[in-house]
Length: 483
Figure (tube, rainbow, N blue to C red):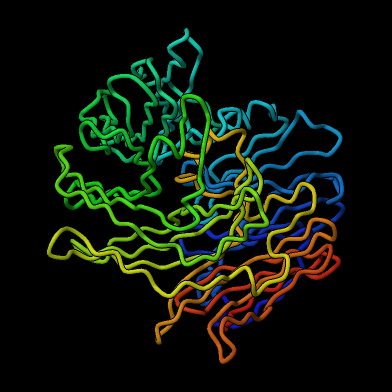
């Protein structure tokens, strides 16, 4: 084992990294006697090497393979090696977090190994369980939604699943059903019914072992035709309770049945809700608060409106919450682009809850062209097929986020860590955006040139680990840094 270090450099071809269970895993290739050997190293948060592994891929060069794919599905490290001119064949290596080999398989059907991706993003895994929501069109009443549970047959083989149970939703008027949480006891579903006697937004608690519905809780008050679109939720195991936060819309603002919207007033205000649900599925408290958006609308942009998405929702005590929202602007019909982030405190008051927003600062104005207009660049954007995807925008994690971290310093003033990606020259720029003497200022603190890789993993406060490769991608560097 190596001693403590603030900086690690070593040769490794086509290196990349990922963060998993508080360790940084660095992986890539070495050539040994004409053989290509895959290597993986794990490092602690203070850059002490913990474990290593290697896997012989035979007489190959790195250029023979596509870029190494990696994931942590079912809480193991899965690496996929695909020869560039054999796109239907893949080699799999599976390791545990200590980098001990679980299994390896050569010449496996690539289409089969990636079959989960065919289910879009309506999947959720918990340990060796996999939950999938599928739909099929039945009649004019709409789609039929099914929640299915599967279990891994054998972790020492490519993932094959045994079917466990299926829960069929009522088929009338369901617009959306999505898995938002699962553990060994429960599966939580967010369901959106756009019409009929059950019209509204619901949290369903389902028995994870039997597939039986335990309780459905409607977020909307009885007789209320407004839409309570969930943006985030917390399940607390200690109390078995659920806290749901989101935004309220009137039927004239958005109509999911006819796919129409009118967001003119959203440039001025946003109504938030907080619903607390107990272990029996009963609502114990409900709060609604109107939050003024301190934004001057640019009337030169015809479709300009601003939209709140709650990215972080944390419980700081039994009654208090810490919330980081991201604001998006809509300047094209089906594109929402990141604009800035905003912090809220939520605490009980004499009536229900008080929502206290921090000072609002526009982070994107400090970084030129942070949100790119170049074709194909989706970083910082949520792209909808149509307005019917708006509820998905509210709660789905953005795949290509430009926000790495947001927090408050000791003053307290907010700061933002933002990533700018330019596709045309394949570069990443990382910025520290903070309150300085001139107001909101930005500092570029890391940039990858073409051919390099650069990843950041933030620790406590402004301390972070940087992973970079050289321009030839033949060497990597791990470094402990502080802004």
